[in-house]
Image (cartoon, rainbow, N blue to C red):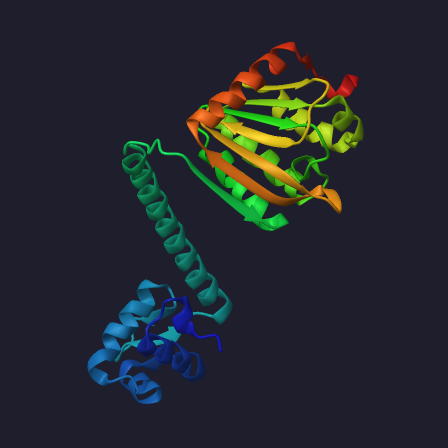
Length: 270
């Protein structure tokens, strides 16, 4: 069950506040008896309730009397305090992440080749966006056939958001597509990419004939290859990620001339 303690009050403070609501204006001694808060603690508890603006006191009376603030007001004040506390904690965690990012990024990269694979649509997308987020300098996306990365649903929106984030941190993004794939894209997909990405100076889209498969080329050292579901080509069956500078250099040699000879694309003019 929900408790005042969930909003930051101690057990004694919660008891005292509930007892104040039932008793109306009352003295500390009377409240101690009604709430089972020890007399030796009641004044500290009442002082804390006043600090949180959950109780008010009548100083002119002898002995001093206390009254509870109305529940709606009291709960909103507790909520505001808790939200402010959580916001402060969130900022602290963000600062920790920034510090650790700088520290961990300063370590020397491991040049040894490594590859991994994710099987399943959701797992494949998770691996893809992880690698997009890891890009520091360049992302080249090559799509020759139907691809989950450019679908109408959540996957396409997710990839688009991560590409925007990459552009915001200074990564150059190049998208090379086959004309056949462009023809299959609904207008809403073209609109999403052009409205959110095309105006960025580091984003470019081109088309060229004869592309096969779909892969992403990251920072000239990593290749992320989408394996389509044979029963549903618009859905990723698996994602293979290969971080191998030598292999990536070979891909780069084949990609560069295709990109140079490709035609710039305008979705509006297709």
